[in-house]
Amino acid sequence: MTTSTLDRPVPTLVPQRQPVVPEEQPPAARPGHSRIRRVLWWAACLICGGLVGLVLAAVGTLRGRVPSRFRLGVVAVGAAAQLAGAGSFAVVGAVADFRPCAVRTVQPPGDAYGTAAVSGGGLWEATRTVVAAPVSGAALLYGVGKGGELYRCDNGTTAMVLDDGVVRAGTMFGTVFLTDQRMEADTPRMRSLAEHEARHTDQWAAFSLAAGPAAFPALYALDEALFPGAFNHFERQAGLEAGGYDPPSDCPSIAGRLTLLSLGLLAGSVLVVRHRLRRPSASKRSGKAVPQR
Image: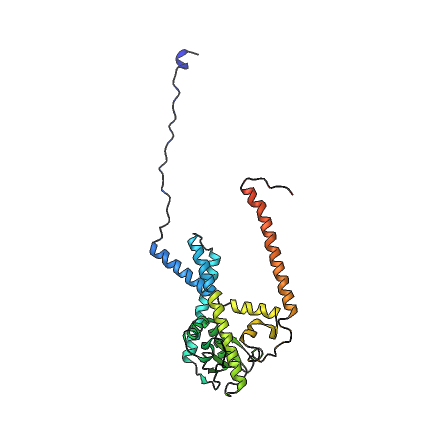
């Protein structure tokens, strides 16, 4: 081996640089479009979940949370159904042939309940009509499909008289009363029933405004399961005698109170267990050893 061979320089390999292709960036959302989508999302949450839904949507948006596709789909379908029901209520109310209701509701002396519920007119009556329009439209379509007779009452409600398909003396859906009772006779019994059902309309509207159209039927069904019949708090608030209920001797029912207490204890136990299970996981994330007990 010669010296010249040892001193020969080693060739340096220069890596070839590949041209850098810029990644495609998604088009930036315009501020105006972002605001429109935000407003539409809030409006849909308000329609489906009332003021509670609006607050939750606003808080999530302010925290930068993006709703999932499933949640977007559910809220969109729910809002579309509500708008369709409200539209049917407006259409049927405009083209249907209403008969005059002979029942004239008069607020009893000393009754502190909302005047608009029994005397007609006022801001609250207009508000509850708009808020309860989706479920009222569904009830009107059901009644018209069964060939019912429509009566317009002076307390802002509508009576749909059917031959069958009603529960008890009737059921209130929004501002529409589905009943099998004839509305031609102005009797004390019918006046009391009209006042009772108008108060159910207030309950529908108040809970729908607070937490969406599903809030009142869900709470009513839960209360009916724990406190059936005359023990139901919604029926008591609307007036038992006016609704045709016999006032119970023991109020509220002992069975209902025990069941409610059991559910409260069960819910408290679940919350305590979840809190205790979350503490070790939080300690592990922070790098601290979990003390052994």
